[in-house]
Figure 1: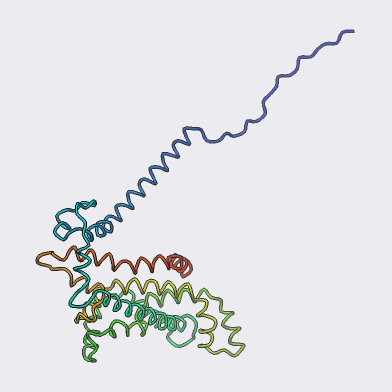
Figure 2: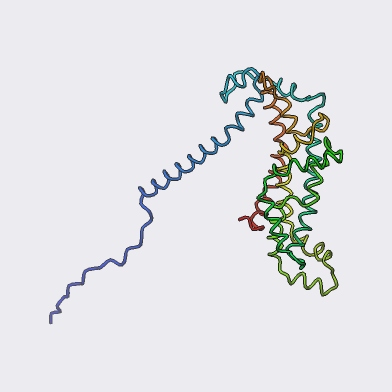
Length: 302
């Protein structure tokens, strides 16, 4: 008995697995990444060029600062630092100290006054609270130049011109509406149940602020301190109005005094002292960068 042999059915391949990107696609992605990063590097160098030029010019002789704009200097000298260290008969560390006193005082003033004002506008119930908050927001849009003359007349009549008080006192009166708005938005994000629980335990409004709200406002307070330091350290207009004696000059005013508008001989010393004036800002920002990013992300500015 013969058995018929059946032809075996053709083997059908199963479903093919999706393959990874082809070599050409990978090359295209690599080229795209190189172009993007190269463009970002060029853009970064373009943005940093003024800072690099200033740093290089600080070590050039004064007569080459404007005549030789190249990044690679042909001559190097420390003469600019030596000549620029004394301004108006005072060493430059005096101006650093004056700027530091004003900046620290401004930070304390903004932290105290703006936090109290923001707490009142965000938590306390009183008549016309929304009207007061609207007035605060309006002052954000008011240019500072509109109130310069009235403020100067007031401080001049009080005999406070050529002192630090006109630059410090307004900070203790909650005049920086931007920080008030920032803190109000942050406090509104804190659950009211915490206030109610503290009130049940017998805490008054100030105790609630001191024990509950203030510790939770740390990100907003740090953000306020950082911006206040940077803005106060770099302020030129306000300090130029009220400070006229060399002994109370701040860093921006001292830098302005270095430049001879007729001969431009002070350009090299200006660059040298500008480099030194950036060191406190760079150190402060490097230390506080993490807190600055965290504070902005948690205070409604994102």
